[in-house]
Structure formats: C-alpha cells, structure tokens
Image 1: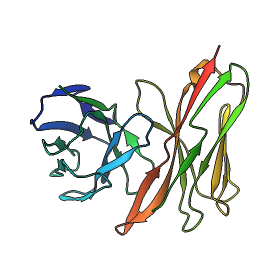
Image 2: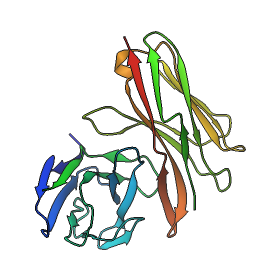
Image 3: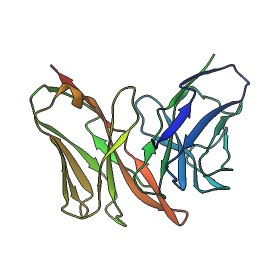
Amino acid sequence: DGGITQSPKYLFRKEGQNVTLSCEQNLNHDAMYWYRQDPGQGLRLIYYSQIVNDFQKGDIAEGYSVSREKKESFPLTVTSAQKNPTAFYLCASSIRGGTEAFFGQGTRLTVV
Amino acid sequence: ILNVEQSPQSLHVQEGDSTNFTCSFPSSNFYALHWYRWETAKSPEALFVMTLNGDEKKKGRISATLNTKEGYSYLYIKGSQPEDSATYLCAFPAPMDSNYQLIWGAGTKLIIKP
C-alpha cells in the first residue's frame, strides 16, 4: 500500500532542544518537500529535494535542516535557532517538481 | 514574487445549496493549476490538475474551470453535503531552480451547515 508516512503525529520540544521529524515515502517519487502551516496562512515551503543527496532551501529555511541520503526518506530537524517552531508540519512528495503532491498526515510540534 | 490568491477565506453554506470559490494565479508562464481538498485530521488530497485553457474537470458533484489568459480558476460544488466541509487549496507550479515548485494559496475553508 503506497503512501507517505510522517512521525510522530504530536511532538513536544523544550526550549533549546533540537528535534527531528520523520518523513518516509514508498511511492518511488524523486521530489520531496517540507511545509509549515500556521493558522490563517497557506503552506510555506521550508526545504525541498529534487533528487537523492540534493536539497534546496525554501522560503523559510532558517532554523531548519534536512538530509536526503535515501530516496525514501527526508527527515527535518527543527533546531534551537528556529525562533517560533510551534506549528503544523507537512511532508509531501511528487514524481518531480510541480506535479501532483502526495502528503503525509502531518506532525504538530509544540514548544513547552 | 509570485502570488496565488484564494477567495473567500471562509464560507458557510447551507446543506443542499451550491457554491463556488476562486483561485487567482499569474497568467504568464502557465504550466498547470492544482486543486486539493484538505479535510480535518486528514492529509490534503488532489482533486484536479488542470493544464488547458478552458478546461473543465468534474468529480461527482465537484467541478472546476480554468482561464489561463486571465489567471483564474473556479471550483464549484453542487448540492453541498456535510462531507464537503474541508479547506480547499489551489497551487500553481512556478519555475524555480530549473524545475517547478508549487506556490500555494491560503485556502478557502468551507463549512456546510446541516
């Protein structure tokens, strides 16, 4: 059953800690993306990757880091440098950039 | 800076009524226009990917039209049902780094009143 899986669903982080959000897909898609959603706003692109071992900053990359060591996996680390990390994070993949996006269920991150 | 605008931001519709909402996008360098439905506690899912000016796509009671020359698309829902309650997003693939990236609208939140 093909799809895209994010974990965990809920995550709590203390001030000053780094946390990593997992994103795995078995759709054989080349492109993967991380978005952030805040109330009343559209999806904002954090990072994207068009191919393994390559990734690019999106509009709001500051305070985040990613890796793409495997085609299936695109983890996002929210570092302590991210000033306002409390948000809903969505991972997506597509065959290539600009084509239909397939989304995970999202991770809601709260800083406590 | 490319912008995708959706209106209205939210909409309350009586069950059984029909409704529509708008997505505006840059009319130059058109590649495609996507519509997604995002139900509460679920992932966004694609409804339509539209590529041709004048195109009309239909899925059950939901349909969409496309005008690439003036840069807008309408989504129509006929005979709204409670299960239509969701946020409807449109996205415009824009050229970026020798490829395309989706630029997203903020969405129209549709609430169907029984």
